Length: 520
Image (cartoon, rainbow, N blue to C red; front, side):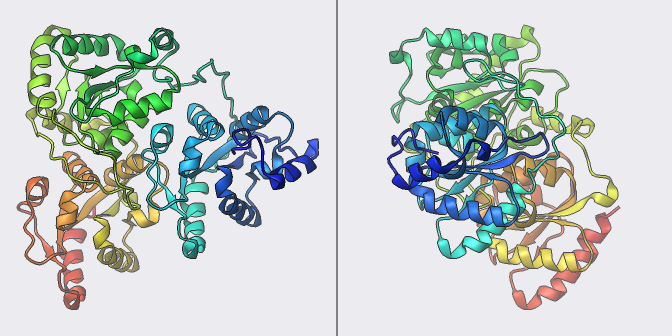
């Protein structure tokens, strides 16, 4: 919604707004929230089309051209507050709009799910827009010919899955930064008192040859975060920490901090895992292919969900005992920070397909990582019981035809199967975590593109760490896996699906020799 930015210059919009009676403003009860459409005026045709289609399907929908009246900021507040999901129409004009930024930021602060709808080919969101959409399953409406299929997917994968039966939705009053619940507005109010006194000139603007180390943490880890920051500064590292540099709009600042980092130190904790803003920072670093270094701050805490997925396979550093700080700090610098410091050019991520594929970063693999993997069986993450476990198909998008064919044949045989094109929704990292965690076997479609994909590496590494059996399915003749893919598939019985003529016999062998033997 963008009228205030444009001073409501559209006569069409003025006439529609003017005709609304006070009674037409939706007042949502707890069990009757709405879908909100947030868009810039240049996307009004698509917004209106989606609105009408949703209405025809019986969804309760808020769009400004129907419900805006009186004070627009009051209406924007009500619209966001009473939504169970906000559809954001991602575009350059949306990113430049103050009111669009307000709507998206408020939805993020109130922990209302955001669904990005891409409206411009080749446009890559930045600033607050990158930050609030990072890691979310998006829908591409840039091609009108695919509207019907895209619309069905939007409903089934994103809207229907988010509609809650909300017995009691109480949104706490926000502070001036809209801090509420478990969200730390980049962590807590006291931090913003510090941030506000910083002059605008203190914000680091990194050149390509002078990126920084970013420290990403929950406010409960502030003492350790500050200690690491001070020690890094003494050594001459350029370091970004929110208590020094945060100001203005927190989502723009978070975006800049991650964008200009050559490595992100994540202070792993239960509170970090529960924080929306920490999730945004970690997900954005992953989306932009910026190396992540996990720093463990709590004994016996095992990460789950997005945090498990984004740190799996990475060399961890354990700072749970302050007595060992100096030696662990030395190791952090020498093994993880110094090895990542380099001249980084323009590392903006390319728009990814529905799997959000990315280039590889081969992590160092240390003994500490395996200690973490070994205790993971005690994780509190809910596990499916044996008859609810599934076969998971892990593949890179170029192998989707074969992946889909195997999926369909397994389904016909009565196997319970997870594949992203059917089940992916909400935050992709949480979904990937659940998919791997609830599998009794993971089929890996081995290919060069799989080996180069960050997300494929995450799925395969997590399966290995959780000791879930991996079955390699070869999809390319003469391709020999290397790096993580070699080590995770070495010694496994492979199945070769490079020749489609032999599909039936190869499929029989896959079921009898590798899947059936593992179903318990």
